[in-house]
Length: 58
View 1 (cartoon, rainbow, N blue to C red):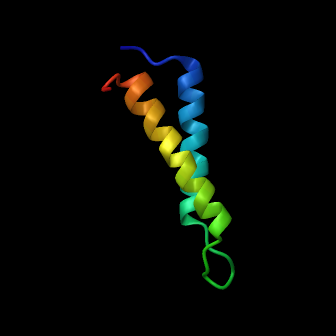
View 2 (spheres, rainbow, N blue to C red; view 1 turned 90 degrees about the horizontal axis):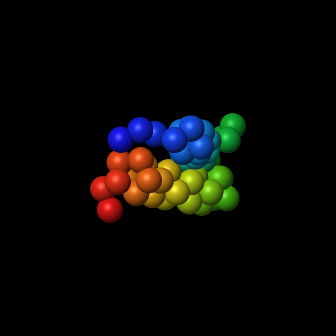
């Protein structure tokens, strides 16, 4: 099982987008719904590529 370079880049980018979108808070401590939405979508894509393409679980 070897990880392809494109999969690695995709995982790194989507992990960063997911982390930033889910943990983002503005100056007042409020969450931004658009960033939260895109963070959750990025997390779904991250999990799909990780489990299906890299780990080949499904």
